[in-house]
Length: 155
Length: 120
Image 1 (cartoon, rainbow over the protein chains, first blue to last red):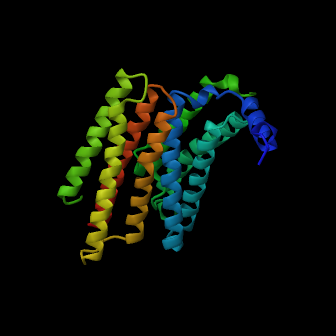
Image 2 (cartoon, each protein chain N blue to C red; image 1 turned 90 degrees about the vertical axis):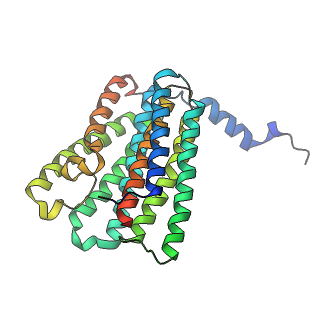
Image 3 (cartoon, helix red, strand yellow; image 1 turned 30 degrees about the vertical axis):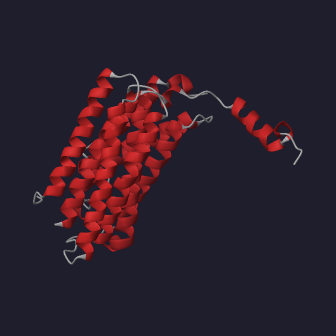
């Protein structure tokens, strides 16, 4: 029991880790926290709903429900990469947000032209109308926010 | 459309008040406002009361019209949101903490609305 805390390797490692930690990127502070919060809400809502849809009625619209799950996963990725201080997280966020914007536009159009495959409720069908068009607006806000914080691109 | 009942009105009032307070706090405060935080606690307490009442309704024969799995899925998702928003809000002192709480209140209302739709 005579061991002093400062001799503990675990404590030393923890201290080294905390001093080496990069400062919080500014994209995850202030208004960025609201954007991340909305991403988190969408990630949770889309993923839980997709899992429910796939478990209970996958046969009705396999394409729509698979896309539902995919969109949920992209929202989860965006939520974490936007709030992460790790190297490359900015670029991952850009990809995730861009995929969302492409997804909501492409699936929105397809739900009009191919309603039999895509009209089933998912985050992206009807340009996100089931979610108050938040899925359409949010990636645009996200792109603007990443552009404003573009100095963190290589950080 | 949904038939309006006491629980739905209560939920709408709690969420609307929490939303209003959080929006005002976003405008006038530069830190998470106590009353906005209390609003998040109030929506959570409402959800707990709603869940207990729903469980009693379900067991008491007046079962859910839609899919119970969907109903309880919505309920658990709704239940997770206010505490996460609460801790997300207090982990940084800025006006935007209040906007996070406002978003949580708005989403809670939508979830209660959807749960009522599924129930009837």
